[in-house]
Length: 242
Image (cartoon, rainbow, N blue to C red; front, side, top):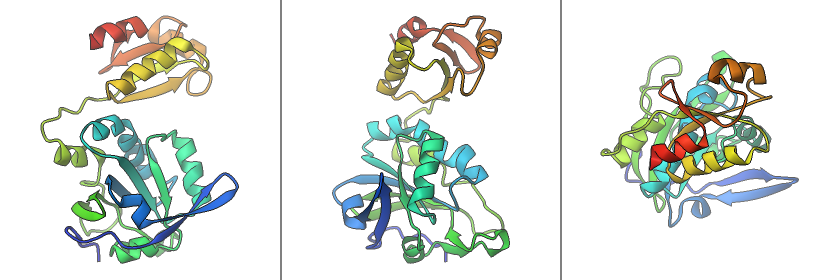
């Protein structure tokens, strides 16, 4: 149980995913064949470590992964399609493909299906990540076999360091935005173009207008911070990259 499967082929499994009002079957071949895919698997959607760190960091660094030859980032969990879709929407993880392993078939064939009965979860996936090249598992980072839910090696930074050891991973910028703001959209597009990770804080959703003014000294948007220091607005971001 929970042993590395480097050098072996991905299990041939059909996943039942949900798109709108329809069930869409996706098999391992269509998901992995002819592509370089980073996979990370975790115990459950909406759980603390998975929601606070594991998924968000892969989403943040997706641009860097793409720059270094990764075609797709896939998150697998023993949850149904409805739950996985709701979690992706809640996390605003547009850079991640969520795959429901509802019956645990994929996790079991990977040797990663474990008992979480003490938490009332039943069977769930052990936490791990892997790099899959054209359907073959090239590298795996499996969390140590110890009690609880260790989270030491399956993180996005470890995987990116394996794929591109020369890359200096930047900490995400914080960008305060407003809904419908064209300058905010331009600033976000520039960050995505430069593959620079960022966290978006939306006025009216994540913070009040008064809160924005208290932090940035201004009610306009976007307002951007780097490494805890105020950078400026969209113009300052353009100058930063220039």
